Length: 94
Length: 459
Figure 1: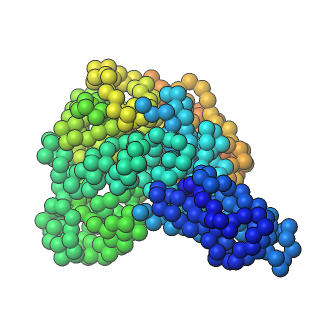
Figure 2: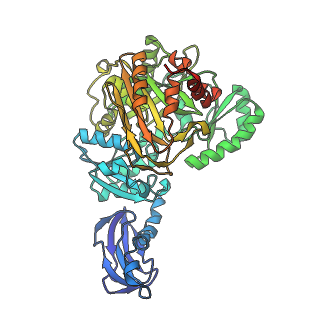
Figure 3: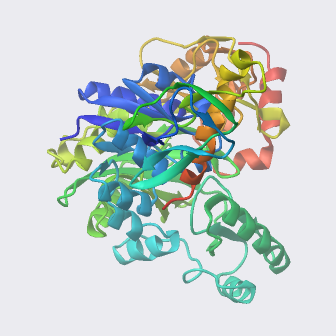
């Protein structure tokens, strides 16, 4: 839960690897990394610079190159898990 | 001035706070976990924001997630409800550090009243009688046993933090105490992250009576009478009523006046409840203060006409109380029934499932506080409270008569609830005579109440 900043590589058509940082969420001044839960080509960016995002909100869609693109691209759970990882540190009070 | 409030809670209290905000012309944003997306408060909110997964530690208990949610949604205050972060002084301090108003006592006040043992001493210094007990926390088993000898058995082991009966045990012998200390410590540590314990003399056949106080930030306070919460099972309240059938007019005003005087003198602020045990002779002993809105606050609202949640918000914004004790008029009798999703016969085991059909009761003096609707799925992660039925009547017998009608009308289908148990309580001779004590239910067993009704011919 916080303000989103996309990384430069988070652009439609760019390819990303699993674990690449695709952006960050600013939570009370602390920047939490958002990493790609899967590798592939970015097919859509769903949140803009400075946008307030909630827990579990999809931030981007990634097409894994090796798999059937549509099904996984629309797989909200895989994308949400990127946010999930980023949000996990929130439970520890700074 | 508060214009937009983040409600950092769930269930019926989130709905209750939301309504209070609306009544004051304040916008309400509801912070919720992934498991509460379909909760009534979320559906009613001006805006809703998901703050974490179902697990409370990462959502409703995450100070950073809650405060960040308040900031990104443009709120200027946070209402913590009850439980979760409501009495956490570090959270209140962090809220203030982000220039948000914490709707409740200030961080300093929460800190002063955080330790139950410390609070007991503080309020004893301001004139309240307390249950004889250990001097502060018991540091280790040896200390506990020595203190126990001094106070005398039977004893109650209590955790310094928290409530709801967790980490609490009654022991009658030295041997029982030795065994229970380990269990209580681990329960308290798991539930509250703090395993400090203290001992209190166990008083037989007591009633639980509590006084509602409202105190502004400028040293003015009133009491709004007492509530009797003696119908309990294992220290968990099931039904609350006011005024207490155990006290006469003189004892009642003595108790309430001494409570508010001590709270004000000790520097308490905002809305709070002082809990007392009342023994068979009518003597009252202070046990603890709850620095938050309580589940059973509507009982007092029905008698006084005061919107206690609205008062919390107003006083948190530093407004003066604006009235005095003489302006507080208490009328009639009110009873609250906690409607839980549970199997009473299976030791009150919580139940989950879909509420297939919900029909609230109505009529004069009947109020329902709930987040239920037909089709709502009760998630398994939180407590079993589905709502509260509150019934008012000009006197106790008429409140009971209206309650019987309301409990017959209330329909919650699809999962098991304790509604039949409440109907049974209203047939119980001891309850009708106003003679319930806090251990009656545990002594008799819940099934006995249900069986008594099943066996009786229908009136």
